[in-house]
Length: 212
Image (cartoon, rainbow, N blue to C red):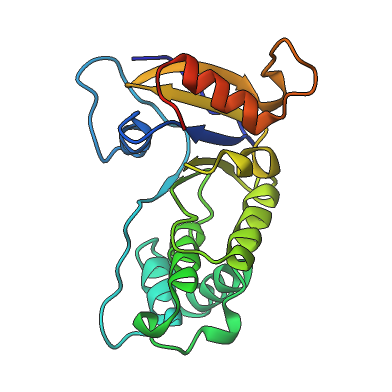
């Protein structure tokens, strides 16, 4: 139950304990769920990457992204160029001919990102995109998200509050479906000037009875 607007170029992190409402928020924002009251509006294309992704047997990474591009009415050379650019954006060019199901978990997450950005969406919604990534893969995805603000607004739900400062400039903290903080990441303040951003987020969540 809250009012929130995504501005052009925003990089927004959403944190909260399990069951806080992060995935539901993204499902509503993407149109996968309809609100019981109020409304969700968008003036541009919205792409959504859910927590769990799967790929069919017998198709390569390139096939997956080209199929996604075909769903946007692209064809011919334009389709192949858009798919190649999306794969390059997530550093999967060298794995483009590998069967999607044979990719590592981290590569599959990046492949799913390539599928949703092939249409150059205005808003990208990522639900727990760091799940299953090793530290190097996680750092690469954090870097991509941090730089994606030049192309689209990015909204990312996550459990790891230590990543927020690296990839987001705005922050939402949810607790039991309620918005308990909405503002700039560097706007969190506590009595001590030595409190880090992750610790400030943890304290705020603990105040809401949701220890992280």
